[in-house]
Length: 177
Image 1 (cartoon, helix red, strand yellow):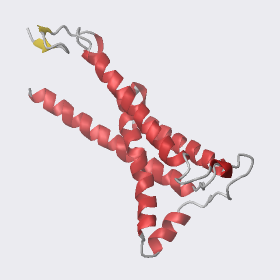
Image 2 (image 1 turned 120 degrees about the horizontal axis):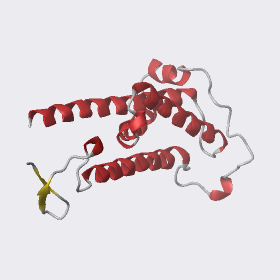
Image 3 (image 1 turned 120 degrees about the vertical axis):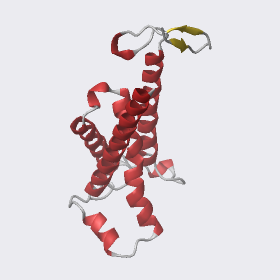
Image 4 (image 1 turned 180 degrees about the vertical axis):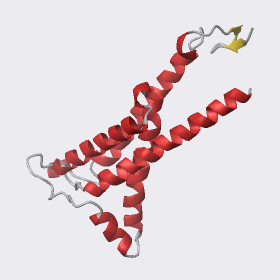
C-alpha cells in the first residue's frame, strides 16, 4: 500500500480513483492551479496588449474612431524589422509578441484537457491573437498588424511545445520512481 501525504501533512492511504486523482483531492488542486495559471496568462495578455501605455490621458480615448489602418500584409512588419539593424524598440516588439503568448500556450493544455492536441491549442492561440488585434483597431495608442497575430500564434505554439516537453519529462520521471 502506498501512502500519500495530504495538505495537512497527515499520511493517508493513496486510493486511486478515476483519471488518476487520489482520495485527498490532489487532482482537484492541480486543476485549480492550472486554471489560475490560464487566467493569469489571459490577464497578462489583456493588460499588455489592450491597456494604453502610461502616461495616457483618458480624454484621448476615442471609441468611435478607427485608430489607424491595420497592416494586413503578412510578414511586412517582420521583414522591415529584420531587413535593417534592429533597434531596442523593434527587438522588444518582435520578442514581446512571441513571449507574451507563451504562458497561454503552456497553461491552456494544463487547464483544458480538450486542448491537449497541437491543432486545438494553436487554433485557440490564433483566435485569441486575432481577437486582441481586432480590439486594437478601436483602442487608442494601439495599431493592428497581421504580423502580431503571426508572432502571438508562434508564441502560443512555443508555449504548447514547452508544455509537451514538460509533460513527457514528467511522465518519464514518474515512470522511473
